[in-house]
Image (cartoon, rainbow, N blue to C red):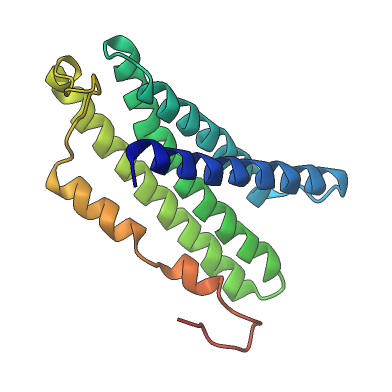
Length: 181
Protein backbone atom coordinates (compact mmCIF):
# COMPACT_ATOMS: atom_id res chain seq x y z
CA UNK A 1 0.00 0.00 0.00
CA UNK A 2 1.38 3.39 -0.93
CA UNK A 3 2.03 6.13 1.59
CA UNK A 4 -0.87 8.20 0.28
CA UNK A 5 -3.28 5.25 0.32
CA UNK A 6 -2.42 4.38 3.92
CA UNK A 7 -2.79 8.03 4.91
CA UNK A 8 -6.25 8.14 3.27
CA UNK A 9 -7.36 4.96 5.08
CA UNK A 10 -6.10 6.33 8.42
CA UNK A 11 -7.83 9.65 7.74
CA UNK A 12 -11.15 7.96 6.99
CA UNK A 13 -10.91 5.99 10.24
CA UNK A 14 -9.98 9.09 12.24
CA UNK A 15 -12.80 11.15 10.73
CA UNK A 16 -15.23 8.31 11.48
CA UNK A 17 -14.02 8.25 15.09
CA UNK A 18 -14.44 12.04 15.34
CA UNK A 19 -17.99 11.88 13.96
CA UNK A 20 -19.00 9.04 16.28
CA UNK A 21 -17.54 10.91 19.25
CA UNK A 22 -19.44 14.06 18.32
CA UNK A 23 -22.67 12.05 18.05
CA UNK A 24 -21.99 10.42 21.42
CA UNK A 25 -21.27 13.73 23.12
CA UNK A 26 -24.35 15.33 21.54
CA UNK A 27 -26.52 12.48 22.79
CA UNK A 28 -25.04 12.66 26.29
CA UNK A 29 -25.59 16.43 26.43
CA UNK A 30 -29.15 16.13 25.13
CA UNK A 31 -30.05 13.50 27.73
CA UNK A 32 -28.28 15.47 30.50
CA UNK A 33 -26.00 12.50 31.26
CA UNK A 34 -22.65 14.22 30.69
CA UNK A 35 -20.11 12.79 33.15
CA UNK A 36 -16.35 12.48 33.70
CA UNK A 37 -15.90 9.89 30.95
CA UNK A 38 -17.43 12.35 28.49
CA UNK A 39 -14.94 15.03 29.50
CA UNK A 40 -12.16 12.57 28.69
CA UNK A 41 -13.91 11.91 25.35
CA UNK A 42 -13.81 15.67 24.66
CA UNK A 43 -10.07 15.68 25.41
CA UNK A 44 -9.60 12.70 23.07
CA UNK A 45 -11.64 14.48 20.40
CA UNK A 46 -9.54 17.65 20.59
CA UNK A 47 -6.29 15.65 20.53
CA UNK A 48 -7.56 13.46 17.67
CA UNK A 49 -8.52 16.44 15.53
CA UNK A 50 -5.18 18.11 16.31
CA UNK A 51 -3.21 15.02 15.32
CA UNK A 52 -5.26 14.63 12.14
CA UNK A 53 -4.60 18.22 11.09
CA UNK A 54 -0.91 18.06 12.04
CA UNK A 55 -0.49 14.77 10.19
CA UNK A 56 -1.92 16.12 6.96
CA UNK A 57 -0.12 19.46 7.32
CA UNK A 58 3.22 17.68 7.73
CA UNK A 59 2.44 15.57 4.66
CA UNK A 60 2.18 18.70 2.52
CA UNK A 61 4.84 20.88 4.12
CA UNK A 62 8.14 21.63 2.48
CA UNK A 63 10.09 21.47 5.72
CA UNK A 64 11.31 24.30 7.88
CA UNK A 65 9.53 25.63 10.95
CA UNK A 66 6.12 24.39 9.77
CA UNK A 67 7.39 20.78 9.70
CA UNK A 68 8.86 21.13 13.19
CA UNK A 69 5.59 22.51 14.59
CA UNK A 70 3.62 19.68 12.95
CA UNK A 71 6.06 17.16 14.40
CA UNK A 72 5.64 18.54 17.94
CA UNK A 73 1.84 18.74 17.69
CA UNK A 74 1.47 15.26 16.21
CA UNK A 75 4.08 13.78 18.56
CA UNK A 76 2.04 14.80 21.60
CA UNK A 77 -1.55 14.95 20.29
CA UNK A 78 -1.75 11.39 18.95
CA UNK A 79 -0.59 9.59 22.12
CA UNK A 80 -2.68 12.02 24.19
CA UNK A 81 -5.77 10.97 22.22
CA UNK A 82 -5.02 7.30 22.90
CA UNK A 83 -4.50 7.86 26.62
CA UNK A 84 -7.63 10.05 26.89
CA UNK A 85 -9.68 7.26 25.30
CA UNK A 86 -8.28 4.82 27.87
CA UNK A 87 -9.27 7.18 30.67
CA UNK A 88 -12.75 7.56 29.19
CA UNK A 89 -13.20 3.78 29.10
CA UNK A 90 -12.00 3.40 32.69
CA UNK A 91 -14.35 6.08 33.95
CA UNK A 92 -17.18 4.43 32.00
CA UNK A 93 -16.41 1.22 33.88
CA UNK A 94 -16.41 3.16 37.16
CA UNK A 95 -19.82 4.63 36.32
CA UNK A 96 -21.28 1.27 35.26
CA UNK A 97 -20.09 -0.40 38.48
CA UNK A 98 -21.03 2.56 40.70
CA UNK A 99 -22.86 0.36 43.23
CA UNK A 100 -19.98 -2.14 43.41
CA UNK A 101 -17.63 0.01 45.45
CA UNK A 102 -14.55 -2.21 45.11
CA UNK A 103 -14.81 -2.39 41.29
CA UNK A 104 -15.44 1.35 41.05
CA UNK A 105 -12.43 2.17 43.23
CA UNK A 106 -10.29 -0.32 41.31
CA UNK A 107 -11.21 1.34 38.00
CA UNK A 108 -10.46 4.79 39.41
CA UNK A 109 -7.13 3.57 40.84
CA UNK A 110 -6.17 2.11 37.46
CA UNK A 111 -7.14 5.44 35.84
CA UNK A 112 -4.81 7.26 38.23
CA UNK A 113 -1.98 4.84 37.43
CA UNK A 114 -2.61 5.41 33.72
CA UNK A 115 -2.52 9.16 34.28
CA UNK A 116 0.87 8.85 35.99
CA UNK A 117 2.16 6.67 33.13
CA UNK A 118 0.90 9.19 30.59
CA UNK A 119 2.62 12.04 32.43
CA UNK A 120 5.86 10.01 32.46
CA UNK A 121 5.58 9.41 28.71
CA UNK A 122 4.97 13.09 27.96
CA UNK A 123 7.83 14.19 30.21
CA UNK A 124 10.21 11.67 28.65
CA UNK A 125 9.27 12.69 25.09
CA UNK A 126 9.51 16.40 25.89
CA UNK A 127 12.93 15.88 27.44
CA UNK A 128 14.20 13.88 24.49
CA UNK A 129 12.79 16.19 21.81
CA UNK A 130 13.85 19.37 23.63
CA UNK A 131 17.31 18.52 24.97
CA UNK A 132 19.00 18.33 21.56
CA UNK A 133 17.34 20.28 18.77
CA UNK A 134 19.70 19.21 15.98
CA UNK A 135 16.96 16.98 14.54
CA UNK A 136 14.97 20.15 13.71
CA UNK A 137 17.59 21.22 11.20
CA UNK A 138 18.10 17.88 9.44
CA UNK A 139 15.02 17.04 7.35
CA UNK A 140 14.94 13.82 5.34
CA UNK A 141 14.72 13.70 1.53
CA UNK A 142 10.96 14.47 1.72
CA UNK A 143 11.48 17.56 3.88
CA UNK A 144 10.15 15.83 7.01
CA UNK A 145 11.88 16.16 10.37
CA UNK A 146 12.31 13.18 12.66
CA UNK A 147 13.49 12.80 16.23
CA UNK A 148 14.40 9.20 16.74
CA UNK A 149 13.16 7.66 19.95
CA UNK A 150 15.63 6.36 22.50
CA UNK A 151 15.23 2.75 23.67
CA UNK A 152 13.40 3.48 26.96
CA UNK A 153 10.68 5.42 25.10
CA UNK A 154 10.35 2.70 22.47
CA UNK A 155 9.98 0.05 25.18
CA UNK A 156 7.46 2.21 27.06
CA UNK A 157 5.44 2.79 23.86
CA UNK A 158 5.42 -0.93 22.99
CA UNK A 159 4.36 -1.96 26.49
CA UNK A 160 1.64 0.67 26.64
CA UNK A 161 0.19 -0.49 23.30
CA UNK A 162 -0.26 -4.12 24.40
CA UNK A 163 -3.62 -5.30 25.74
CA UNK A 164 -3.90 -4.03 29.26
CA UNK A 165 -6.24 -4.38 32.21
CA UNK A 166 -8.38 -1.67 30.66
CA UNK A 167 -9.06 -3.93 27.65
CA UNK A 168 -9.72 -6.94 29.86
CA UNK A 169 -12.20 -5.03 32.03
CA UNK A 170 -14.21 -3.89 29.02
CA UNK A 171 -14.64 -7.39 27.56
CA UNK A 172 -16.98 -8.64 30.30
CA UNK A 173 -20.50 -9.64 29.23
CA UNK A 174 -21.78 -8.99 32.73
CA UNK A 175 -20.40 -8.78 36.24
CA UNK A 176 -20.36 -12.61 36.72
CA UNK A 177 -18.65 -13.67 33.52
CA UNK A 178 -14.90 -13.86 33.07
CA UNK A 179 -12.80 -11.99 30.55
CA UNK A 180 -12.75 -13.21 26.96
CA UNK A 181 -9.41 -13.34 25.18
